[in-house]
Length: 504
Image 1 (cartoon, rainbow, N blue to C red):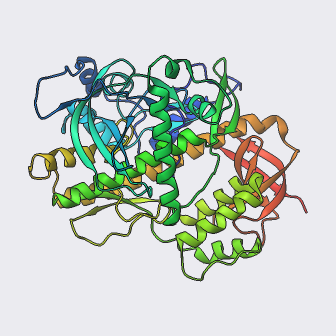
Image 2: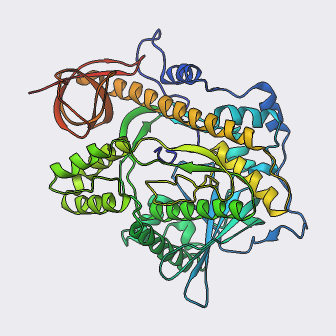
Image 3: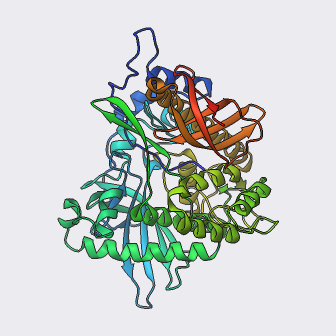
């Protein structure tokens, strides 16, 4: 499962490897990796020309589009994100439930099917976030400006209403088009510190009357959603993915991107909104691109990991039992929980897209413990979300789906493939960045955890800096989740190779 995007804008242009001039920069390496994986690193000239010709979408008097600009909408995202896909606001219902409204950027009003911009987005299918910078799916004029839900800007959106009951269960909800206005652009870290009582309210939050109470209502709804998902077996994982750190444009570290309450809240809203979107299309008789995660093939290894920690899991895969085990380990060994989470994520496998027809039995998402799930909340960053918006818009007015079943089947396979390619590019460039950082430390020893074992090699992850490399000597008998002591023996930044030797 890919993590949420680390950055929403390109890394500093001065990013370099501090190596001789004949050595490639990280940007060179990233460009080559994109080409090798069938991804376009640059926008075609026609797409750039289209982007330059676009203008902001003006608010219209169309009665079918609701005017919700007066609500206390706010965005919460990474500190360096500029491609804002979602806003949220909550309303208290008389029966005790909370109605959460999630506004999602209506990218489709600007990116038309058949355009050069759409063709590029359809080829790559996703923004690619690397340690050398971001390769956005859409030109920055759109993703960080015209189609971004920026503060103090009137924007077109699709709004997904999620009714969160007192038991935390999300109902089917409602979907409609609306005009929205972001009242405050906030960050995960700033909101989380305030919610935890560790800091005062961020300046933008404090400046908007009523927004503090509004966010506390959202957080209560988010906690209720999270608790309900946990009761159904949603997995509580914390992998602490590597996030590049720059100083004056130079890569200086790869640090853990740690979760917090604000991230959990927004993630919960997105999961609920994606569920509402999937069920809405089903009820309207429309096909959909579902996002699924199959039952893990290596459940036996997960059972073995649990047994090694004194816990028993059933012989057949059970998300509920696995989450119960994870919850116990989070409390018993919090410092080791990210490493355990990483091992479980590796064994769960990758998600995929699938075209489904209304009423068709679906595989569901094992990690989220949901049956109805699509991707609809990040159309600036993911092409499947843009496709889902087009399906939703057609369903709203009773029109035929804009894409036929054969095309949706092909798109599902293509998006799955390109998402996997994007993840490989991100991993390859992250390894090159780690190789640069580790080159002065050849000969030093590190504690690590085995993250992969195949006929191609045995892989280990260290945490200072966060880096993954191959064990070239002493790997015999190792398996995923084994702890191991290794010494760094060689690096190759160009190829992203980091080689370790096991220390007995």
